[in-house]
Length: 419
Ligand SMILES: [Zn+2]
Ligand SMILES: [Zn+2]
Image (cartoon, rainbow, N blue to C red; front, top):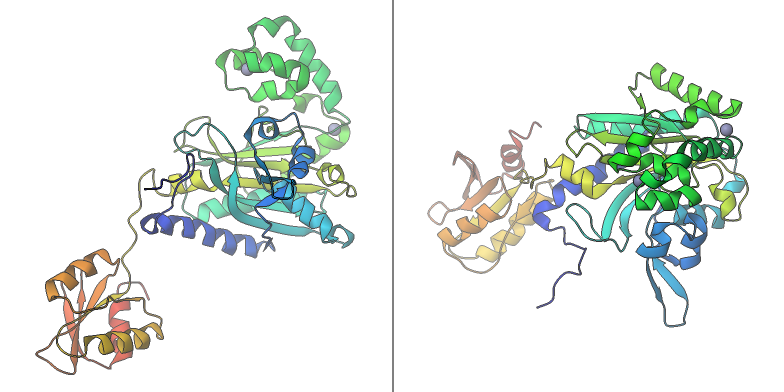
């Protein structure tokens, strides 16, 4: 027998509801904020990610699913979706239109990482990109939106962690301050950070190793070395969040892995995950579109790890789906005809109907009803022609109806659903 590919998994029908709930809520809430969905291909040219993410990043160096197609072109399964969205944005000439372009996406991404609990090689993201707005309002509103999204899903214990990574005016100066502060501690840094010290010293700030964290416990932090423009932006974002009554905490260690971020970076942590686990993160990337050969279009975005979100939503376990709809049960003559006709009539009135085919005993049909995910059964007993019974599976309570009283049957099943 075949098995699922290592690092991937099936999301089975019994577990799909929580995924659909999260996705539906994204469509609903993002729509309220003027966002529209974009669907880009899962395959892109490898160069897109090399150029967009930088060829010295871990993702590009070690984690991409890259292969040659039949014509020898190098293609990659998308490891993230900002680069593809920027490509689509430029290819469609959207940068020539005035105003904000608000887009979001939902879908699978692929990274060749060591599989571990809650981490998969095919993982899923919900992400948002806003192009064309340099104003701090864009940052604040987009962050407010994601918190509203989490709130609507009923996820408590979320904390917005805010930081700034400056821009090309102030970051080089801070980089030097940071390197000077670390020069005498180089030997104490972890192996990764010793490498980061030369390449990308800002990333030492978000190292999870205790020794590295201790060395930088009291800074220096970038927020004390910002240029006037970045300082103003950072303060404006905070003021707007306060106006909107969105609680946040300044967290100078949030620098995000990719070096295209400018100014605002943020994460949302959740107390039901481990202390250092964030549910989502993102920020501003004013130089990104230029990197792909486009004009200087400011951008802001975030991505939510859907696999983790689902884990939080279901409390770490499997959420039993709420039974809904009706399962048809009949014995005697012309069973199939009755099944087909009744199902059609009820479905056209908006009721979920599950039926099975072929002659079976009453007992066998009841067993199937229990597994069907239905809240009720509709029974046509042989002994009372023209009459049917609606029985609630939970407690066996039942009522009798004329077999063509479709509206009444639907109403009976819907009672208790809060309609
Ligand atoms: Zn380190
Ligand atoms: Zn600056």
